[in-house]
Length: 581
Image: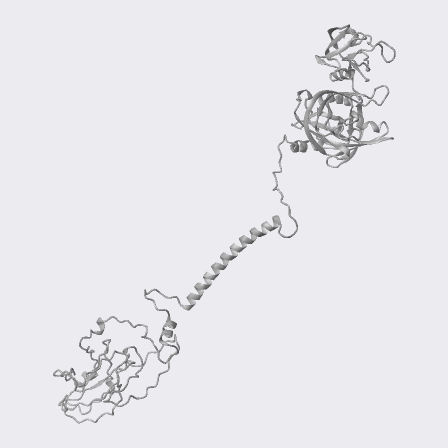
């Protein structure tokens, strides 16, 4: 560069991006300011206000004052933004002391400096010395008519170094060190991590607050899941411990509840329908007391029971009736018959009585299920069950009187349903809850056949009066106060040991054994005849003959097989009636 042409002063761009400005006086020429081009292609800004043009005229030959020399960086800019710690060159004085500016707290916005915006620091390209090969030539000449002063203050486009592409064609990638602050706490890596983790994919990174919220949500969900699982397991364990017990009191397993309803033909169904109509009788007399059972016949308060149940009351005793509801009322005897062992009592002032329906004992078959209800040993409302084990059993009971007037002859139904003392007079029910018999006697071990007024227990042999016979007797007792007995008009030899029933030689009053004008005499019966069959059924004793006869009504016609002198013949007769046994 010639001394008369002008002097160009180049201001290097610093690491902070601010270009140092030098004052240049051009003598008779143009003062030009050239900006060095950085590695990124950005031009350093020229501080136009710092340039003083002294003695610049149209002709360019005015005198000028030498500017004060301003220190300038003596080292290459750090491409990574580090402060100027380079060694000074041999052709310049030592760099001045640089004081760090105040560093704002991380996350605080830094206000923009006043004045024109400061361009980012440009990568420094060393300017070649005029004494070295490759130094640039003189400044470009000013076109004719241009104002050198205005041209000096106008921004100039950066001149890229040879082989360096323009700045707008090079993609900008700040890199991890672009925001490194040498005066802040921590290393460059720590500062970069404080601003957020680096992402290679460009995906968004959660902030610390978002990460905390996400962690809390995950923790809450897991807490709920664990709580639900623990509750389920705890409930199952608790139920098991409650049911089976662990280490505490013994808890025995129990079956679940069953439906409340029962089939009508089941024992429970039969008992449920019959119990409201079954009563317990307590009888007190002058010499003895007893307990028995009865059942309601009609809504007028008539109750059927056994004769031997009410017999202790006599003429001056007392009878009380207790219903299944617990209500107790007094009762009086309407009529009784020792030959059939039946009696009827009546209560008054009781409403809502439910009679038990009467069945048909002729339709009963061996093996049919039955239910017996009574008060064995004064245990009211006791229900037992069994079957009909036999039919037409000739049963006699009583006989405590010398004349035999208290003997009962029953063509009984046999059952294995348990019957005990206190069951006397109670109903024997079929599967439809209909009365088919009246429980009257039991076979006790060692005591023979007796009414159940004794203290012997059941051995599975109980006997009941067929309801067809009891119905006729009860009607007569209610209507007439007494019952009639069918008879054939003969006196039997009760001591006869042969097979069949023999007609005695004379009556108990030394009269004829065959009643004159009676059914037997009209049929041609004589003393000494042996009756072996009644209606085609074999009889073996006199008791059996009486039982067979009393199974019928007065006026019924019977067909008898009679043996006389070793010859058998059949006779037919019509049964008569008697008011006595």
